Length: 256
Image (cartoon, rainbow, N blue to C red; front, side, top):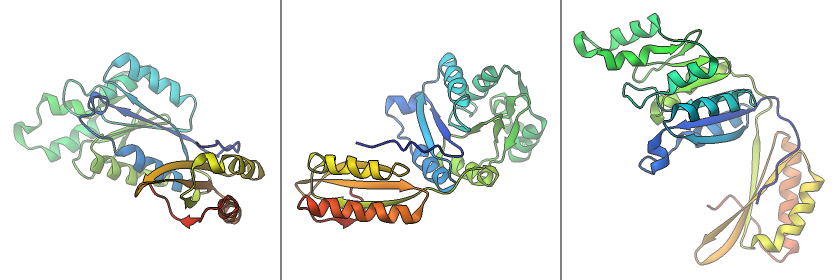
């Protein structure tokens, strides 16, 4: 169980994970966790994440839906050289602009690929929506791009991280989000009522409860997230107190 904080952050983000390989289970996504943690540290909480198949209409619809709702949108995957790498064209369609061969991107690829290595397939990685700004790729050269509030990144985790690390200083967020975690071997049902009352006392803090099973015992990790360090400390003390009141022993840290 988790409670949504009613406070409105200065900036918000959505992540679109694009690719049939994620939905098939062949590839396990790790990009969302990285982006969520990095953006949270910048004061830009991720409010929505979607996994979208390699279907043009669905990608276009998803891009248009989230870019209208959130401050920033980050897409991962689908900007390689193969036939199913259709993200660039879909983003262009979402914005109603042409997909063009970017001279700067072509120059980058020519420096990276020698002779006939820069074939027609690889040149597809230099096509971007008209009006885009390139995002540097220090790992494998082929760039991502930004158009409007949409940032299109690679799906390969090491490349995606390098791209994001290069652009994150230009993002504008609010105070960084911090957290406190208190765990117990009490079940959620035992502490639910007291936890709800604590949430009402601290409406600007997001309090979530996450059950676990470890060493043959059930328990709950209680996580408080917010931007006010002093208030988080008060909530953490409140969590420890309610656990003791229900006959449990609180301990620090989360168990998954």
